[in-house]
Length: 109
Length: 113
Image 1 (tube, one colour):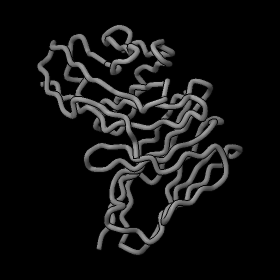
Image 2 (cartoon, chains in turn brown, purple):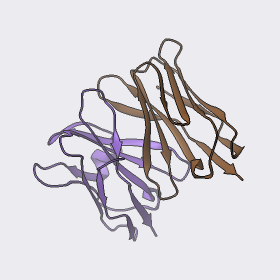
Image 3 (cartoon, chains in turn orange, yellow):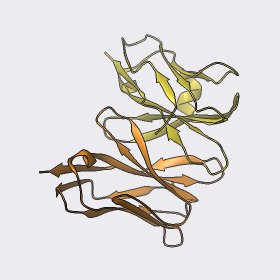
């Protein structure tokens, strides 16, 4: 079935540095959402993209539907960025999300 | 960020007991989804509604769960007879339905002893 492959599964950054997370899709997806899940379990909306690139503060995300991937760039990482990041692709007309398995980010001083 | 309200935050049940969770979607969002997130971070779609109508549900939901989204009342998801494997975070999300962007509640964490 439709799948979302997310990498890396874990990431450790020092404060002030940056990195990129990536999701590859096995089929054409209509849109992608990125979430941060905090320690309480809440899924915080970061981005929704049907195409192109969006930026919000220290975060930037791109969705390339033609090549079936999306990226989330984090720059100048802060301690509060620690958590698990999920991409989820919207497939078909039902709006159903298919999630990746997440990237656990730990930001160290 | 999100105005989807889920209750209770935590519930603990014995095997065979019923487990009921509720969700109030964001105002103006006619589409509601339920997902199950297990400890391995796997998200499983359970069921979705448009207003009061079920759009899609998986086999497990149809056989073991009772779910509804009545008008002017919270949506609910109830496991009829809890099993150990049902221990998970149950997430409710709502959407306007046009773009498909989902907004999630904080979830109900179920532990089945």
